Image 1: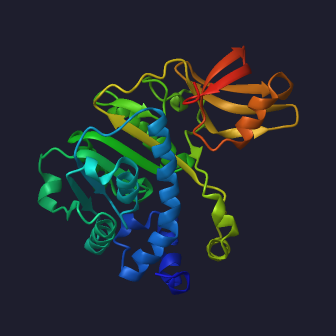
Image 2: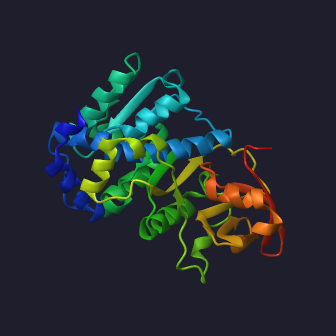
Length: 330
């Protein structure tokens, strides 16, 4: 599909449904042109979020242990294709796809097979979803605000059958806190690989943290800002191409690589003339920290410009950061 062939009525309808949980009221994939248009635009933006999550998993030295993969609620299959590109298709023996609309699962299967023709790719049946066969790696992407109570229950039952889960969502407060509650619910069965640097209860649920939520920002490819098609898309869709907020959780039955002593910046730092300020999460909970520019100008600049996941080992004097080493730099 070319940019001039985008199905704008379908894209407008899909965006309205995504923003207001339209899938909970019924199917919304209505045509191949809708799926293709979504895959090239909104789906690609979701792919950039997956790219950032996968870069973090690489920093954490995490790889899936299972040879089977299930993409639940696959849509156009963008999450599966990002996973296969990152880890390598030869790591997997079977890829399974499911969506509440068969047209989407078929589209995802066709696109995935086009990119990875040697891989066994299949759409799953209701019998598989209701069975007890092990799943391996379970992918979930941007479904939480669309799930009916019944679908959420079904998904949680599937998670019990998985060896590992990568779940990526939008970065809104409501969605993030809902995903955090699920993370805590599953923490007795799985180890938390990311985004946390600890295995404690999520600190945003502390009594005085009701206004906080766990979210991050993925950097879009810089070349899109010089691409007239992307610029026109952003203007037509009414979205800020620079902003890609997301939340996520990665769970594994295996213990993760240790990151003791590291902290995670929530959201992104605020930069003022004399200092940077940010919400910090670590095993001790949430804390608002500052990093005076005069004490460490290089770190001040790095916090403003780096596109890497904001995971640091700090040197602190109370709530002031004097130095920091980013994960993967040591």
